[in-house]
Amino acid sequence: MFTRLAIPDVILVQPKRHGDHRGFFEESFVASRYAEGGIEGPFVQDNHSLSGGVGTLRGLHFQTEPSPQGKLVRCTRGRILDVAVDIRQGSPTYGQHVSEELSAENGRQLWVPAGFAHGFVTLEPNTEVQYKVTSYYDPEADKGLAWDDPALGIDWGLGGKEPVLSGKDTQHPVLADLPTYFTYKG
Image (cartoon, rainbow, N blue to C red; front, top):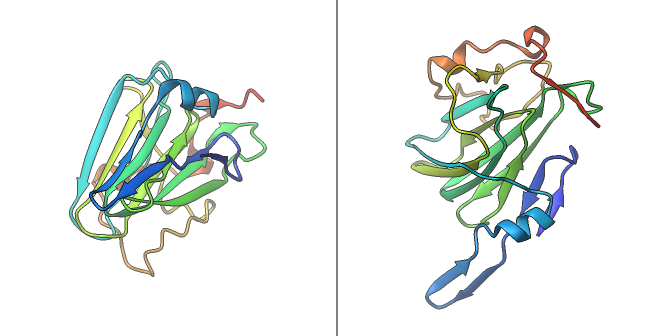
């Protein structure tokens, strides 16, 4: 159910689904079970996005002190490639990333703790993503990292096509120019 990825602080979650001829039922979040799996809130806000076209890229985003956010991400319609980049200075995995495909069909979730930049790209039209966060949105703490920084080496699966981006997401700094917002604590 809870799998630590190549960057162990990022956790892939596979909730148990019970299916029959009507469809399925799953408990998409149970605080006590998630805490046992290494994911602790408290979660204070739920977010929901709809992206119309394939190749819509949202990211790479994070929030700094005093409002750093951990995110528990799931795709409830369509498919995404979800990416987490370690931006904790001194971390043995600083500047490295992990990615996982999340979809309505596979039901997987990704836990992205504070200290990571997060983003996703849509792989199907009309994709919906929902995520729980551990801090409220804070425009003063809202920051980003360049999605296309060559030093990160992220394969977004776009096959050379340009993504659909917000204006804000075209102006984030590369990792080499990012101030130290987070420090690895071991």
